[in-house]
Length: 113
Image (cartoon, rainbow, N blue to C red; front, side, top):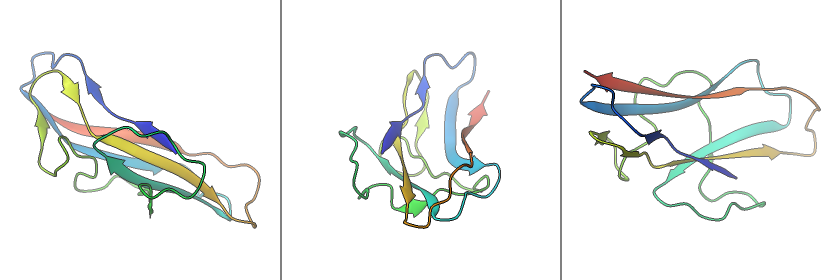
């Protein structure tokens, strides 16, 4: 597992940050490899076994609605410096996994002036 979150230090004149979305882009993953995704309000020591948090395939294109929350629930916003919930990722390989491949994981948000 890998944990990551958005940290807003300064809104730079905006009034809020919301609608956080996480996805992957690039070529299809090699056979036998998947990247799982989930979210958590708290950091935990990453596991080397199958994650109980990162359990769904990360979207392979930009989602239309938020999939990374603020404060543990959909519809949250940062109106001052603060953090999103944690995005939790895990690459899972089976016995047929091929060597190679790459992907880019992106974080996208909406900003209100």
